[in-house]
Structures are given as C-alpha cells and as structure tokens.
Length: 400
Image (cartoon, rainbow, N blue to C red; front, top):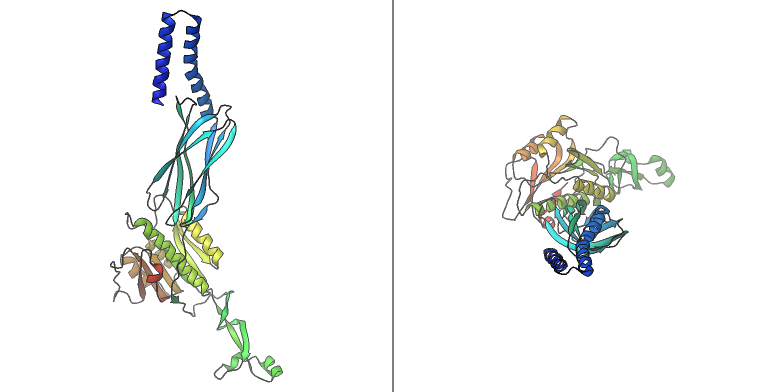
C-alpha cells in the first residue's frame, strides 16, 4: 500500500513536470486524471466504510468439547461501490486461561450486498470461548488507501464438558422429603404413601404390609412393597474459585466441571435426584438447581458455564456454607464439594458444621504425586483426590 502511494505520487510529479515543460492540453488532462484517481478512490472507499456493518454469527450458544463448530463473519454493505479487499483480524480464547489465538481473513465485498466468510473453531477444554473480530480494514481497488470499517465485534459460545464413568454406590437414607412425590421405578422402599408392587408373602414380611382384602380373594397372603423416594436431599457443590493462575488453570477448571457432571450423571442413573450449587458470576450470588433428569442437568451446566465472567471472580465456598447454615441449615443425605483448593479451613468447616449422613470433598490435583492428606484430620469428611484428566481412574467407590 505504501508502494502504491509512492508510485502515484511519482506519477503525479512526472505529469506535473511534463505539463510545465510541454504546454499541451494532453499534458493537462493527464495531470488532472492522475490527481483525480486517488481522490476518487478515497471518496468511494470512505463511502463504503460508512455504509458497512459486520457481525459474528454462531449456530447456537453451545458446542461440544473437541468438536469443531462453524463461525460466520457476516458483512453488510449498503454502498454502491465494491471493495476489492477486506481484511479481518480474528482472535479467540477460553476465559479460563486467556491465551489468545489470532488469525486473519481476507475477502472481497460486493456493492449493496451481504456476504459471509465461514471458519471453524474447536476447544480441547470446556468453558466459554470468546470470539472477537478485533478490526476490519477495507482497501480501495488500487490499494492506495485503507480504512477501518468495524472493530470489537464479539460473541461467545459455551463449550460443554463430557461425562466420565465413575464407580460408587448410592446410600439410602431416612432423610426424605416430607412432600416426596418422586419414587424409584426399580427398587422398593419404606414409604407407605405409594405402593411399589404386590407380591406373595415371604417369611419375615411384616404383618402390617399384608393386603388383607386382596389376600381374601386370592386365598393366599399378598404383601405390599412400599415405594422408595428418590428426591432425598443431596447437594453437589462446585467451587469455581480460581486458586492457581498457571498453565494448569484451564485443565483444572475442565476437570472440576467434568467431575461435577460425571457425579451428577451417576446419581441420575441410580435414581437419586439432587441439587447442584455453584456461584454465578453474572448474578453475583450462589445458585441452587434441582436436578431431576438429563435435561435439567444439561441446562444447569450450560447456565453455569455461561455465568462465568472474564475475571473468574467467585466467592469462596465458606460464604455459601455459612449462609446456608444461617438460613435453611443442612439436613442432607449427602453433601459433596468439588474443589481445587488444598486448604484445610473449608474442609474443617464442612466436617464440623454440615449435617449430612455422607460428606465428601473431591479435590482436583495436578499429578498423582500431589496428594491431599486427610488421615486422622476429619471425623466425618471423606477426601478424594482427582488427578487432572483422570476422573474415572480417581473416583472409585465413592458413596453419595
């Protein structure tokens, strides 16, 4: 572009000298044309700049981890003048680590038209991927002038985590909801408000469970199996506070969220309804979501990821624990906190103040050598270290 400016300046000087030395009409016309061409290029490109808008278009607000998704840079031009070259500078990053990746796109822009250029991105880790068109430059057909036509066009997409298989067992507690309306479809229980099944009498069955009216018709004892409530109070608490700013930050966050979704999925597969609690950066408060199925789990994870802000601000878990203890208190079948903190203060608080039949602390560590010592420290709390990226191998025989 600088060379073109120098070239036209030299041509104008040559034409001016030619006009001075030779007073011909042709020399005057040639000088006028050489001066007019850059002026016309400047005016038409300026008009095109002021008549242009741009946007980034995504197919949705979520994408799957390790799968590419399409992004379109869409340019709308109301100018009657075409643009031979437009240059867009694109950058994108995951908010969990802010490592910015950049590339450039080149395209022509037709007059009075809308057009798109597509590219594909993917993320190795879950989280929010921010995509930004930092600036768009347009050039006149002769590449003499360059104008910035648009800048700071942003969008974002939530990259969803993957569920991992974990092994464990579900404990059945007497702490059931007094207004329980959800019962197991596969296992009997002790809730007399609903009958699970009718069967023949076995030695040892309680007499108060015999269906006397039906037994008199069948000439044999028929016993009622009561239902097993599955909406037992249980909480999975995700601590999204960033305790380390390094190359491990993104893998740690990824493991935290995938551990949460894996445990939640395991509980759903075993008919255990539960609550997920986390801090929402957008609302500035802790949120509790009742998980009743895969749809509610997917919606919760999506909203959780989209609630994370660029500064990664998160209230410490002590705020949630103390506030809940002061308001509704804890009376739970199980409480599980998923965190990357190795500090003992919050673990001691859970051990002493959370009233639950089972208390777990799932702590994400960077390597198998980075152990989390808990022997003899806690009377009620089970501490389970999870190595980054090794959720299935780390969580074995957890009780929820």
